Image (tube, rainbow, N blue to C red; front, side):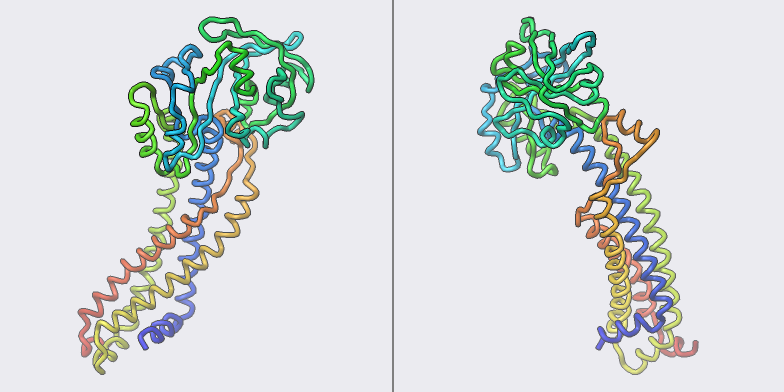
Length: 403
């Protein structure tokens, strides 16, 4: 009976109920979309900088991060990779070798950052998915993959042979001829201007550094367990190696993400302050209007706790309807922009690209976003319900029926 009464009472004043539902729905929709944008950008940052470049965790020889020289590399066989892979949160380990050289073709020369890829763990999708021309290099064929803008600057075409010159391991001379097998677009102009990829074995041969790597790059199954996994790896390796998380290696990115999240929290706080006042106004009016009705119900023998339950259910119904409508409105919008990220242009695009990010605004479709904001609205609703509960508790039937 209480449940039926609460449902019918919710729609006695349809206009007021619809206004409240609309306000809740708008706030939830705005909050979900705002957090979807923030989280989408955070995920894109991690994908661009962390997952596609440095990994969540890296293992270096002691002192390498402060003095990133090839001579400070280490032999991969010195690390028990199998034991690290056995950890529950470790997904994959890639060997990493990188160095700076000069690349030259005819009358053009530019400093080039050569990175390796480890074919033993599978060719990274960041490479195979971004090849725009040509093909993937064959191992042992003296072939190289090069960023589009670097290739355009050197005026080199697929099949042309370039000269690479630099310093190898322990002062050895590094020089070689490599043909261009393909061009790649890393969707980051700053990187495209200097990047080239070579398979691990070919780069080790070029640098006279057999078995040498500069880092072991670790991907995780659950990034939320980052610090726990880092501690487990450090315990396995002892003090012979330094184990660093992406937050330690790129504190600027972490600070950028914290700032972005803080801005989103401030905006959400403003939205929920608005919805709080709207809901409280509705509850206040409804309670004052119904004092006579509640007084009559109490006078004829209805227990106060049942009246309280009825009012609580009414507000819960309205809140749930508003939340559901808000989520339904936000979901298709978020999903559309998840599939079709907003492309930036002009100065905003240039700024994003200079920071090393793709000039797009992606959305996230993480269901946890909608769930979190739904819970916030329900909590606000339950807190505001304290007002009519206190009114009913102090209600005196005779005084209420004199109104």
